[in-house]
Image (tube, rainbow, N blue to C red; front, top):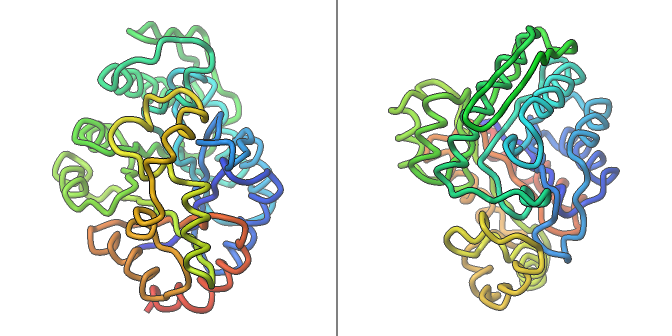
Length: 318
């Protein structure tokens, strides 16, 4: 049976709200936390995007749940040696309950320094080199590195956890899944795709954890929940590589008319039908996932946590 966690959305909530959601998640019976790492929200309606490492510090004092970034891009906006320091400190503050989820990123967040946004194949090369650098730094030894994409000179992390931070790699296609299987400590993907899980396992993932996430919108009025999803998260229904290459929230807003309420209704769990929520989460379990994270879209966070505490999680745990 998978472990069930809560997915904190930095794009939608202020820091104090995220800390309070972490408390409610722990009280509701969720077993771990994910938290997004963004520079921009996907659109202005979401309206937030705090610095994730500050929020993790606050959460470490508020709850005892394990927490993981889902996901950090350690390649363009922030040098991997700096991400390594942030991750190591987070692991110390959480007494080793932090994992670093990484991915090849989106232009939305990573192009802000004005660098060229590389094609996917180059981004995966950069990610692999970044992981190598971070793992060397997690040892606490002095590191110098002169690679294809990064230079590091005389860098040493003095604040490190007892055990190196585990690095899980996000993938949505064969190339990234292959990288995760080869060099990751675990695999992250956002669809209950059994083929990707099988590829990861056969490619070297074996007993390493496979983690997935989904967004729902609990509410007693299903039509209103559908409208809330379309207003705040229509971006998650855009096809192809747009999520990786569009550079600003306004570009995602320009594409919102492509996403209809019917599309949202057919592709997102909305409302308070227990079976609908259970079916979504069980799809990940059936595909072989070890951990499943769920995020509530919109303002009714307390209603969501009460619903999952009393109705959903007890059935998942049977």
